[in-house]
Image 1 (tube, rainbow, N blue to C red):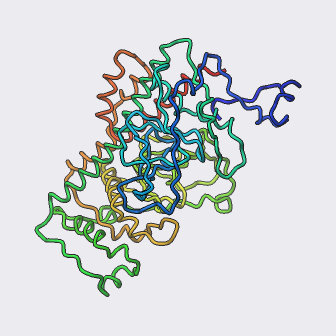
Image 2: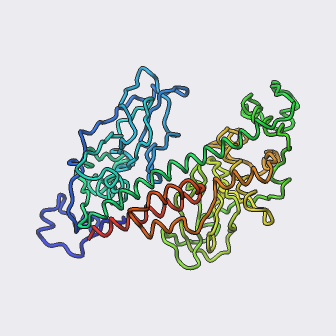
Image 3: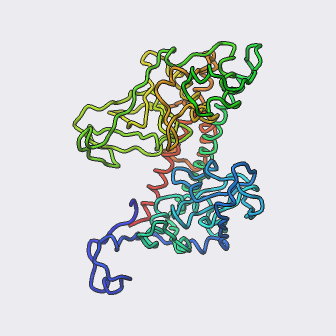
Length: 483
């Protein structure tokens, strides 16, 4: 935990007053503030609690959506609506979800908070989610910034009984403390940084959509004169792919395949373009020997990027560090890391120092002599294929499927012009040495004007770096108010 601590000593009175008279140090974990504070219940209107509908009311194709607790994640201040599920109209309850509302999880991943950045008239919330509105007693975005931090979640965690499979925090969120700093400039700073954080996450998602739109528009607008003609499954198809499952023979799959193969400039596999694949290693103790894992970097340790910690946008959510005496497979800066098992996400590490590796669920795609923008383009095409369901169709096996190495010799990539590839690559990575300067040299008068332009110019990886820096700065400001 970042903000809670165990007292160095406890006296007999502390023991008597403890709810279970415990001698376990962890039962005395606490967060002590050195600033004034106000309880969250004094800053919010009456909470509105979601309602469970039962899995029998889930529908695959429905315009009405059900927001479950998993839609709120610690990696984003925005909702992950990809995990919302279709809902039977007869069970839909309108919670009037509007831009500016806050959703909080009271069950399962307790204390998780997200900001709604646009009206969601067709969405409803589950029983584990609470809708909150902040009053005018304290700056709204300052409160949101505090609520999104580990400081807030740790408070709820300490108030919630341990041990249950699914934990229920009930109304404990009302009793969390929101610090009021002695220096009110901190309130303004955290408020502005939180607004910047929201803007950057919105822009990051927009950039991802822009990339997919650019790819699809380029393909559709530059087709050869041949017309798509869907043919039913033939014996030759079965012989060619040696597959009996239906994913590769659907009309949807064939349409996407035709769109790429019928591109005017042609298409090739990445193998034909000089890339080669390296499968990540098995990191089990029996294979590589004992490793020492840590959340913090230590000299000569490996940085482990797992496919499960790569977002669909091509950013990393978490890096694990571990020490091992063996020489493990490492990737180089600008290699493509591809989640070959179930996730099918991809990431390009840039400006990483030291040894970086992945596990056997990941595949490294390497081309030592290729320009970086061409590698980024291949990564973006993989994202487009994933969004279209193509990678899932190629995958085999259970638990989400596995993208077999042999399909790198089959999957075709369109040969876009260099200029078009650069346009797409710049939306993913467009670095500038000054992108972070205004955050650490914070000037309340000029920050938003500078930041708005930087956000517009930045690529996905650049925005991700800025987002992580903002979170770190907010954590530092909170730490100043904690003993």
